[in-house]
Image (cartoon, rainbow, N blue to C red; front, side):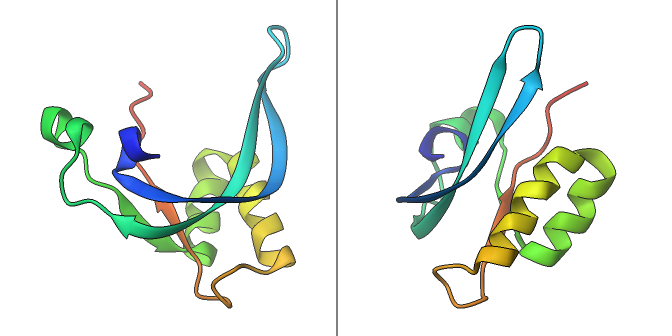
Length: 99
């Protein structure tokens, strides 16, 4: 997360595992990340101009349901299981560079 979004944090519980490519058996493990520190500038932001955006979990789920429904499932699991921030959780979204 530091390289991609300029955030440092503490890795929490596993929310789930999803397969992006069943033929190649590519799996992605999704964890809760508690973020106490946000950087204004980091290497990727300087070279690409990309900045992270933060959304309330409910808003992130709605957006993901339209574009990446598998990802939305894991945020639903976060809502169901509670969060270390007492319901004030925010989800980080980065611009999608996929064509």
